[in-house]
Amino acid sequence: MAARTALSLLAVPLAFVSACAPELYKRDGVHPIHKRQHIPNTIADTRGWTFDQSEEWNTLHADWGYCMNGIQQSPIAYESWMGSSQKHQPTFNYPNSVFGSLNNWDFGPQFTYDDSGVKPTLHFEENGKNETVYFKSWHTHAPAEHTIDGWRPKAEMHFVHYTADGTPRAVVGFLIDRTPQSQGSEFFSQMADSPDFRSNTTVADIEINLNIAINEVLGYTDFFTYQGSLTTPPCKEGLRWFVAKQVIYMSDLQMQTLLDRSTFSARPTQPVWLHNVNA
Ligand SMILES: [Zn+2]
Image (cartoon, rainbow, N blue to C red):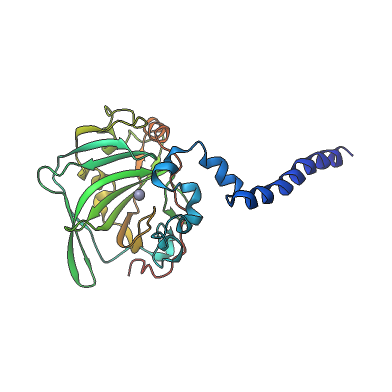
């Protein structure tokens, strides 16, 4: 008897919701969930999209069709049976010191190289051609966008590289998680004195060593790679993706700090189609 009472109480609000939602949907063409999230969200007003809307990015702008009809969309759900790549070994030619600015890209910390000094480059082979691309920036996502055997680490960092003519061409991914045993990531400890990433300020003249991240994933020798896309609009394809299988481990405090300065920023994994994983 007690259980039946509980059930009937539950039935009332459910009936109310199902009666009201379609009407709202019809009235202004905006799903009530998206509408509710959009109103206080100034990110959508400046960018024209949010991660909450990722399933309908293609409807938001005439040039964002790839987000729905692309054949090499990122991120993907990697499975162990796909193995490690024996090809496309990335070679990093990063100076030990690069200068740039730190800000928050609305979803987490971002570093943008200021184009001074020796250019940090990445070399890899694709279709028999040796390519050189140029590091421009890194940013983080929380939680991670790529998954391994269904496991989603707490965060992910992307080193974004462009061709000489300014086209995004290669992304070097790092999965990030925490462990109580970790003394902390040395790479992220370089930003210990950085400003509060949640603010709108950009702080210039920050010096970092990109090679420390490469060292923290054991030289980037065990990785998976595929042909993919930007994970945000316009979801442009033609990018070589690398994701190290070794995770960067943070201390609990570092992870808490990173998450405190982040907002949800993981596009759902996309079906593996013509991605040529590790091929
Ligand atoms: Zn990214």
